[in-house]
Length: 325
Image (cartoon, rainbow, N blue to C red):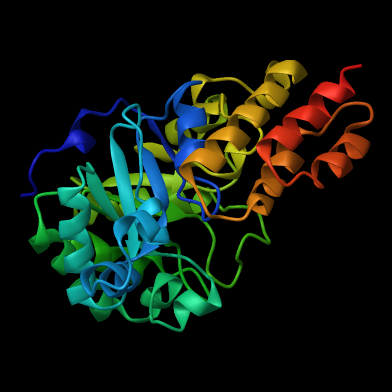
């Protein structure tokens, strides 16, 4: 039986933040936390191998280590889960011990990323094809610390394989499993198949009812999430792209509920926080946020084009201020 943790004290259903590369960094998480926090925060995914080679081997001090900056967090982000990836149990054990020492509340293992560079390392979605390697990584994380271990994955690789793949994960008894309701082959090119969550819940109920199941895919509001949880029987809902341009989503607000002035103010706040918390990441990373916040109103395209030229937060703020006149 697994130890009790924050996972056992969440509401039903609960809502969690998706781990998204170059999105759910410390700056964006702080923006969301100030406007209505999710029940669980997630970091961007971090390479366990990279942490070992840049930190343990002394190649970079923490202050200069981009992977350590990806593990930065503010006091308002609790509970928060650090997401790691590796196919090497020793590397996962090292990184799990590290995030436990850093004060994280849990560790999540990425077994769903379709990025080719990640898969070439035997990580991410590639682990769906190597279930024994997945087992070894989960066990290594569980044995490395007292932190609860969870897994984020997909419903299959080239085709849906929940009977085989989900059963393997359930046998390892993680605290929670997040299912992105698409296969690796489907990427995000087709709608998420929420009917498959019903099948996943039935498998879970038979195999290991203590494991929480979180559904992920195309959810844009807590209202929609509550409906899907009631319909499918999953325990929680993960929101990813629904956060774009709407850091109020976990407070129950839809994008159209928020005045434009508040959206633009949030964009400026994010840009200043990004410069403070995420150096020396390229300011161009904020372009995806500019696209999300600056849309759906007259002259939005023109304003977006000007903002895309900004190279600093001060410049971005000046462009917006000038646009008011």
